[in-house]
Length: 348
Image (cartoon, rainbow, N blue to C red; front, side):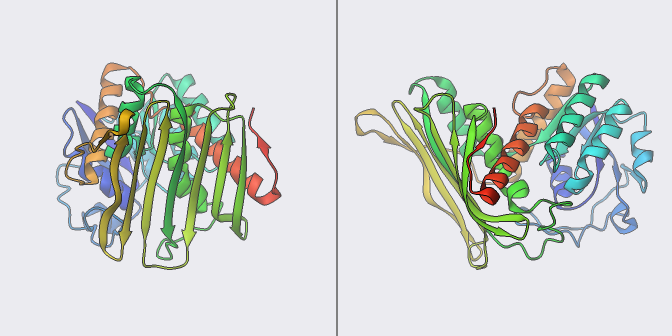
């Protein structure tokens, strides 16, 4: 049994707590929160853009700590799940690794590439696993696309376009603060930056156009260049001021013998596919995969099953690896630099 201590009880801490209940071989033994109310199990003030609302939790079988050091000193904890604000990811993760714990840290791995590298190095030095919570590859549409690509049935990857746009999340404190959260580039687009890195490898250069809000990208489109000039990847992301469409994402991925795509949006309170997951194959063949009931907690359950497997078997996850998450942050900063300077930015 893998015993987990969750550091930070906000929206993602709650989502992780709920998802752990569905996974065999891993359980939450302890939590750390500076809020006495949350340590007492009153999570009714927690809100997010998907999943269930916060509620009262029975924490009678969970040890609760008001100081991080208490959690890190707990000898019964095998893995620390870091769901604190992004600016605390690096310091908390490195402290947990030095305390001999494995770490599963929410994305982004850190706000700066240098801090992400320090985290990766600390994991190597401590001989503990560092996994980063990039859940997107576990969402059914993205997991399906990976299966199609990895099957080799439709030939090599030729490129793709990715989209992730939200209404300005004015209800989120510090969202536009580059030193605490990082804005839509590091909170939102980092999902697709990681997925692009996972599928295509590291680009050689990036070119970005769009608009800034102060020091933070607000809305943009990026083109990624690879060593193979036949591979072309683009991504559109950011926020819009209008609140009628709080979330949309999708992709169109091109292979030699097929194209896979989907488009999803929440309009008002209604979530639906604008284009359901579709594979356009040879000879005009069109197919639609069956991808489950749409419960977003399923992806987190699958992700945490991967975390449990990695710790139990000592075989690191290829998807949740710290170096991939570090590269995603580097890609985000390169896009920001390109947008700010209006120049091509080289990565290698």
